[in-house]
Length: 529
Image 1 (cartoon, rainbow, N blue to C red):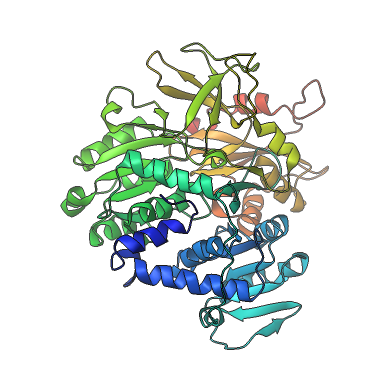
Image 2: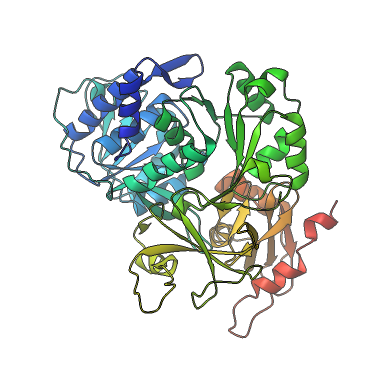
């Protein structure tokens, strides 16, 4: 059984070296070639000085080099940090600084986008360009630029095998309810256990072909790789422009498994699925928010031979629950039960277990629980706490993740999502910090005070409504403010509308009363229809 993340590929290569591992456009890599590339890049990384548990950031779309980088960094005893390619330069720079990345793997076009931010990334020393044809190292300001080909051409320097499964292998950045994105620390054990668990309940086999349309900066996105590699299946890489492109690719590549978030499923459910896809698609999965029941029913009609898995997860524990497809008709609003090798508890504030039907906080224990937040011990202490003990006489030291999500459990043990304990916005499958949106709006100079709220939306789950006060003697240019956000933020973080108020309500502590505003505008977008 695989112990370290890169062992997934090595073991699949041992079983069938000629099997297709990856496909991108009209090119493919079999498991033998992929394993060899990973070995060569890992040696190259060691040659340029990568030390154990050092962070390497990857800022690329879905290319072969992107996947090779993840697993080569794992093999070289480093820590890979995927950066969503749609993030703005300031957000990329924040991740580079916060992760203390010394090495960045990217391409020339993306390097030019973040060039002005690099001076503030004080730990960064080496940039590896996948599309540079230079055979020698050049200098870019104070940075060393290394060609990808240089790493491939490295001599047979040995890789020191000092890593164990409890060691850190990746940091995935996810937005919290306050401040900038937080880095969730994942171990080899976290990711390998996740691959085994998901492949088990999805019944993945070596003849599966998975279409990877989600960003690899998401745990749900990178799971498509690890799940496939766990069983020697094939993954087709795709950065789609339109939902129709997804169906076309699924048809062309005889895709058997497809994962997406609710906004994409809502769009896909409106389209026609050719008979070829109906015949090949064995399963689809949903996570990142609840799938509307109307969308579920449309997909069941469009894909009558396809199993549909509704799932719940959080980056801090990878994946927590799934609903077996045979339960869809009886409980389509349920998030299911715990995935294999995980225990899910619903507890009161004092840690005691909730009764059936009683709302409480979801707590996840087991080997999928992450190691904490990078560079943030206070946030780690808030979310990663000891497992509630069923017997006060038995002290438990195991750490569980307290999700901050309020759910309930029925008499048969099935779980149902109620609400989020914090104020984080979840739109289009993304977790968005309202504070981060507000900080950008403040830099516009167009407002005096501002609140960004996640308001229910029929297609997006939530969308962002901005409520603000104008500077004295002026009024707010709503269209201008939204255009400013479009320049400074990725599309999923751009507000949908702006409302001007003379003042914002306060709670007894003098803080802006977000809950009151959220309640007041809860039907805002529904009433606009």
